[in-house]
Length: 371
Image 1: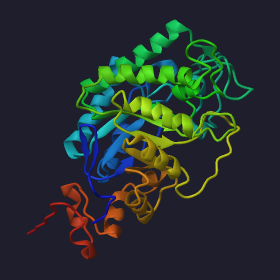
Image 2 (image 1 turned 120 degrees about the vertical axis):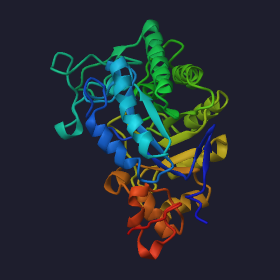
Image 3 (image 1 turned 180 degrees about the horizontal axis):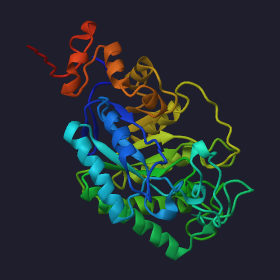
Image 4 (image 1 turned 180 degrees about the vertical axis):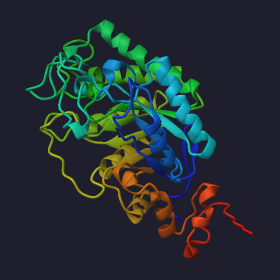
């Protein structure tokens, strides 16, 4: 039996298999509200047969967006728009859906990738003043963010809590807190971005303090039977930056506070990063977190082939694998993986008759008759 297609338990949430659709920003929302693009995009991914879909980085406040087109969950309009999309998914797919709650910090106020991705200055149309642990810009030529004071920290925590409450109301199955890719919580963790001299900067314990406080607040605000976990960049790929030892320490602290899993990625906090790319290049970091922390870990990064994903699970290197670009390129990746690995997968009944002759047992519970 394929290990990739075995069930996986994340807290109280049971996944039918270990394939996770990773969060993928679409830069297509209006004032944070999901629209028809999200209905189409998420709708067809919900028919893919993956075990879990995590919605794109979803801002907890307008200033927490990466771009003006980012999805948000900070207003009644945002909540209603996402509820509409989620309702359509629920009507046609049993796939669990989680949301990644995020604050971009100093990497906010950016143009969409197809517009170049550069920072939009505060005085330019669509731009705003970003905020961060310290008044240190992501790149020297960029506008420096405003350093968050104690009132600002409380405001951000409250924004995460309110977004978690909205996520609970519309029935999302889980929350992933974005602590990676150089966004706000990662900025607190990394000495590259965090130059504070108060209780939230300096030592490892102090730099972990705010991300842990945010996790605790979200965990308390979200129904206990639904899981909350964090995505963490295991290394900055920059000497003197955040590293795997800090990641293990943070993961242990989160485990003690009820974290259901760790989604392990890398990089994003500095343009000086020197990433060593290659197939599955981030998997060893997930393997170490799994071995030393004992929480379910999800590996990501240039995992493209079914046999590769199967080996990661079979060797115990991670408990789940998440795919982003590979899923965009092939939205039926789980179907094709099941066919190659001799497994079965859920498919919508409207598509049952597409089951190839050579894979007669590919789709769960499939039957078809016609007169």
